[in-house]
Amino acid sequence: MSLEDLRDALRSFAAARDWDSYHTPKNLVMALSGEVGELTDLFQWLTPEEAADAMRDPELAWNVRDELADVMHYLVRLADKLDVDLVEAAFAKIERNERRFPTGDLRPVDDGGR
Figure 1: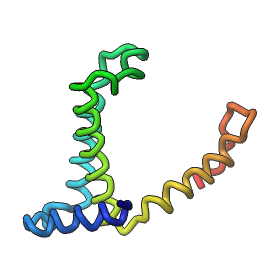
Figure 2: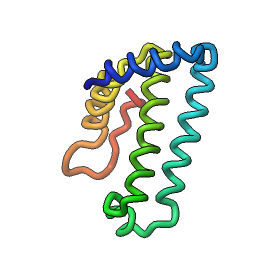
Figure 3: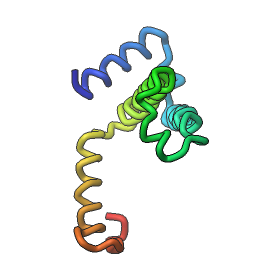
Figure 4: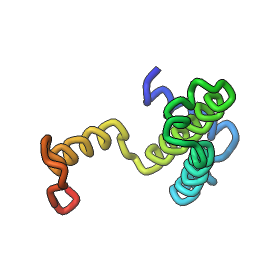
């Protein structure tokens, strides 16, 4: 399965339910933010050690996977609506970060955000 397969499945899911009119960029980014908040809630009061071991707790692991899936669904749907290739955008961001954060230097290089 690929990111494109997921995008297509989410398109079909939304279309079958006549949700396209509700899946505006504004609504999708708000829903994405809400799902990130739900994921954050799972970790909010954990110690760093507990957070690192989160996937060893079956109930917490299930909830983490579920919220990560929600986050990914909304992110992929938002990118689809905005015609953004997420993989291309992510690799472009890595390239920018490699210039901003050269190895051996902990301080960012100001590249004007490009």
